[in-house]
Image (cartoon, rainbow, N blue to C red; front, side, top):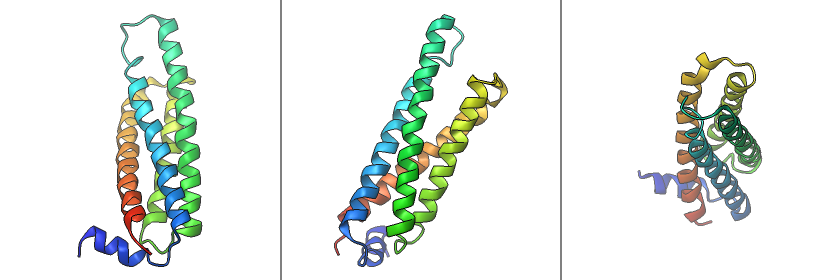
Length: 147
């Protein structure tokens, strides 16, 4: 059975509104994840002045909040309205937790100065990006399925 066929058979009882809301929320969160990637490259090197590094670090840090907020709301929508779709609510919950772990690691690096966490921060960022892409594709499949 293909992924599309599985999605169609499991979403027949799911209203269009929650599917659309989930897709938009995951899309917005994923957009800010991409923003995080672009801004991280601006300060991760030692070849820039301290003031410039601090500015880019702050911009990067502020970008983490929309990632977490949209992930949280998407997880709430998934748990409340999309439980019929196998594994989606759990994946959305894992995505939200991963975004919080990512933020905590970034906070420990920038505020507490624990630079040794940078490699772990990068690895968790890859996990967050992978989940954002997977959930975006899954939400696109949900949006295309008919009721």
